[in-house]
Amino acid sequence: MKKLTAIIVGAGHRALLYAEYALVKPDELEIVGVAEPDSTKRAHAANVHKIPQERCFTTAEELSRVPKFADFVINGTMDKLHVPTSVPLLKAGYDILLEKPFATDKNEMRHLVKTAQKLKRRIAICHVLRYAPFYAGIKQRILAGDIGDIMNIQTTENVSYHHVAAAFIRGKWGTKKYGGSSFLMAKCCHDLDLITWLKSGIHPSRVASMGSRMFFIPEKAPVGSGMHCLTDCPKEVEAACLYSARKHYVDHNWWPFYVWDFNDKFKDQTLPSSEERIRRLSDPANPYGRCVWKTDGDIIDHQSVVIEFADGATATHNLVSGASKSERNIQIIGTKGEIRGAFESGKFTIVRMDPRPGHEHAEEVVDTNISGDFSGLSGAHGGGDARLIADFVRVMRGEQPSFSYTGIEDSVYGHITGFLADEAMAKRTEMTIPRI
Ligand SMILES: NC(=O)c1ccc[n+]([C@@H]2O[C@H](COP(=O)([O-])OP(=O)(O)OC[C@H]3O[C@@H](n4cnc5c(N)ncnc54)[C@H](O)[C@@H]3O)[C@@H](O)[C@H]2O)c1
Figure 1 (cartoon, rainbow, N blue to C red):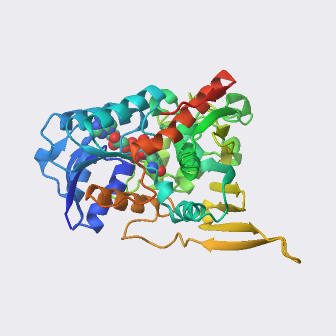
Figure 2: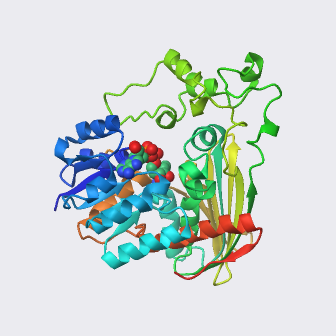
């Protein structure tokens, strides 16, 4: 078996997770370089993967200026850097495993697709949910014809109150200017990808969308609240608040890789103590100490999307933040039956018509056993992360891709549907989705 080599571009949370494959399957993959502006993260990655100094670079651009020295690049930079960092790397000869959303608007999207096609380079997009046994199992049943032709798909993503606060309201996707993406694209380009993948081969032709920021606004803040939970918010108001930074990041240790830039892949890194966390959150410059109703955020907090396909089928996706519990739900109604399930449960149910006397319908529960570990990697995204990198390595070795494989050409319809949904929402109209 040919051993492959890869370079980490953006030694943050996501890229290091995929790079872990090299540690658990050293006979298949070796990380031989890193490009990362943050010197601490760069040194950590170099240390973990034993990368020599001469193969450590400060940026993707710097890396692209030296002759190609690996089979591919893992690009885990932030959304708005995906295209600017990938184009020079494609030109330098690299194939790329690229995080989603792979572009921030439709022009960038077309530019990247065309550049990859022109240079004949491979880009795979990290749509990890396609690989999760839950969604892969559903796709298998659809391909097998179990529910006939799909008439309607309904998906929802409920983003929990602590997740939305850390990543989107106080966090790095809080403003489009900083994060690069709308809330829909940052959070749900996966769901739009799943919808278009489940309907593979059928063109999504129209999209409409509505949504707004209705809750995380100053008018909805508790009476008498301050600007920062640990500095100027009265004790009794903070004590009663569901979004208190102290409750989320000191009493709980929620989202440490965002709040403390803590990466558990770095064995020599430790989490700050409670005292240190309180000290840091008391700094008015710390975005994670802000009152969730009084940030500079400009993303919406809920959105509904309606899609029509060329064969007349329809789909809806609902993104709602501030839920008590994170959950992705799906219901697919076909001409012969239905599939429904909650991703987090790892189980889906196939419901079939049964008109025999004394019957009406029959249910078959499929348990995908998402807790099942895979090749030593963590089971993140319902097992999707580990399976995605394993499949990409196989494809790069020249083997057949799995049916979950998300080449960039195959990811464009999910992305364009999202970009146009946001445009439709802003213009209060519906948009025609072009063929690409
Ligand atoms: N597939 C998924 O399910 C999933 C889940 C979460 C996040 N994401 C996506 O993954 C991406 C990365 O997210 P993250 O939380 O790991 O980000 P991160 O901030 O932890 O890592 C990004 C890294 O890129 C570095 N960087 C900045 N400029 C650079 C340059 N010019 N060259 C090289 N490196 C540079 C930053 O210093 C940082 O360390 C985002 O686009 C995000 O939307 C995907």
